[in-house]
View (cartoon, rainbow, N blue to C red):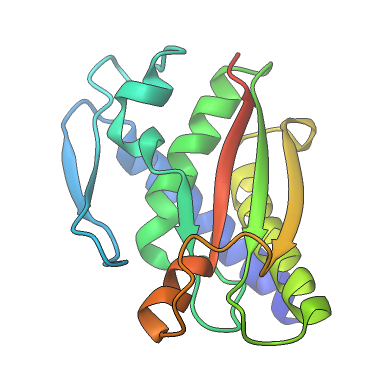
Length: 172
């Protein structure tokens, strides 16, 4: 019973965020602190329409990592706007394709971490799909603990490894 409510809630939040991001004003949004100071802003000054170059120029679309809490596969609220931006881009460009690479930190068994990475990838896939992207544009892969971005044995490092990387395999 939890899963459908989560999916509906995620879809509602993503849709509301997508509507909020479609204006012509630039809205700053504080990103999560993952060891670097980074601020994500959405800037769709062209009436909500993206170009293929927007993947490299739009600050919302440049955010291609979604971080998760320990043993969680629920998208953190501060990443809903980035997920909505990618959904809008995918909706606008039906030929675009992404691979959602789920990752986990080193704690837990290999099998558990592979499953957790897949659940995280599926959470992002569901949110992007609910916000307008086609399921044929999305591919989920789990790497579990196999591709860490940080190899230290500390909470700050583990936090960086609990993520989904959004990798564009086709841009239009």
